[in-house]
Image (cartoon, rainbow, N blue to C red):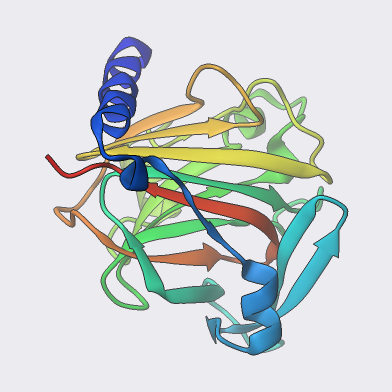
Length: 223
């Protein structure tokens, strides 16, 4: 599985290197500026600008009556194949912190997402430790269905284990249906899955409450 992920990732990087210079450069998305300007559209929560040293971005909080995922949409930012990078900070609070990134979204409720469970990063319980990073394809394949029908396929531990209360770097490599997730600067993907839908591109969004900073989006070059 990890060998296949390396092949997909290598092919993507080669396509970027072969592209014109303008296609190779990542696009920095200034979440802090967008939050201050009020141009981030939210569903189920609020978003404010955040400045924390080198971490410049946005803080997402849930509204008091929110029952489902909290989303913050970047309606003008989309991606098909390529690389998404950002820093995420959650909390070491059991069953209360699930920050992540939504991508290839076609509507507010139809989206793929990868999210973290920081409270499981360093859990001593073996099963909890296994459930540190999760892929979902909403609305049809939420975490509960995936865990019941495909146990330990769409969620994994992360290595090295980050500080559950600190900033964590997350990198997603999208290559066709293959999604490779790198957490905490690891050299090996912590999770490799096949997308559970046929969408090839769509919008980006911040997924659930947490702190988000330094978002970079690098679309793969078109051949």
